[in-house]
Length: 143
Length: 369
Image (cartoon, rainbow over all chains, first blue to last red; front, side, top):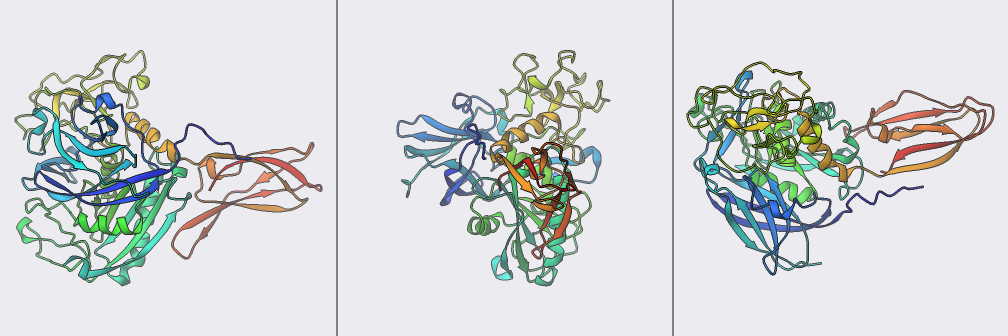
């Protein structure tokens, strides 16, 4: 006898979006649609009010419909590790960051844009107000 | 360079708790292993998996986690070691172009081409939630970001666990300096708004602090303040090690930002995750846990039934609560057996034994696979 747990989210269609960044320039490289579980949205009213970085999915009216607060995937420093227990971790500035990262968001029919919101990706950016960093038009879903 | 310097051999599911669409999926790739060294990579991955399993709270959330190993061979072994950082100048041809001195300045910054890593993972397992690369070098090093990278040096797996905190669970760093205590000159007082990350805060109000449910009524807030904001506060813990409160010094600042516990893996390597981080990990992984299944079964007189498990120690995959239905009967269970599979994974079984002279009906509880 199976006892379903109604509170558990079911696997659903998710957009797996791969981005590349070079300095403060970010571009969408590819998209896959895949069935999986991703975390639920953080409270939508917090996304633009907290320090840090958020991924925000917006509908055709520009209203947020899903968002996650996270560590910024593109930043002008690197985490460096050392055997010195008093300084086993530290940050070092990287003036030319370059790389790739993935964002997972639900595949929602009325989602139109994906935004990165947070501090500017540059040294000492945390002293500046969070703002929209990049915005991408999403292609219609293929399902 | 890069993809011409090796091959993607294939992917193996080494911790299997079910369909990847329903579980939290960790992918671990090899870098700097020649094809003849991939058996060693299997061993290295198993070592990390064992470490992860022994790391609370992953142990109790284990049933919600799948782990995949992607074997990638390289033409040469190891990672580049540029002379710019005092290295030997070794420049191997490897699939993900691993190199120490990844920024041209810092020797221990071990990086890979994470674009190539994402290409491989997107093709092999697009349900991946977390990606790690183990680099075949005994020199200490690693890096974070969207791909956690670490070497085989003793203790380097801590880098993977710390970076997983950032990438998978959104944790902020809890150390109270940027480059180092006594080095920074601009990290005295935090003046920004409330951080979005779940493990640091500006708030010391008992009723509104993010992790208030973990703070005992008898714990003072703030629990530890920094008396000199021009310096890191490396003073002793004023309370017991397991006390959750508000400890000043976090998020690269000496003052104005607080962490939940004196020590945490997000503050310094070699510590457990603090109670605040553990709670977030549990909450994040909860949707991936299998549903419980309850059932009734009959075991014949004198028979032994083997129930296959995916990992020992977690009750979700043991036949627990074997309650006898047949009046007057008793069953016993044996210590799990171990089976090493050809693909390098391990499965376990537990035996339910009926010593009675009658068939016995029993209830069991397990979890779906």
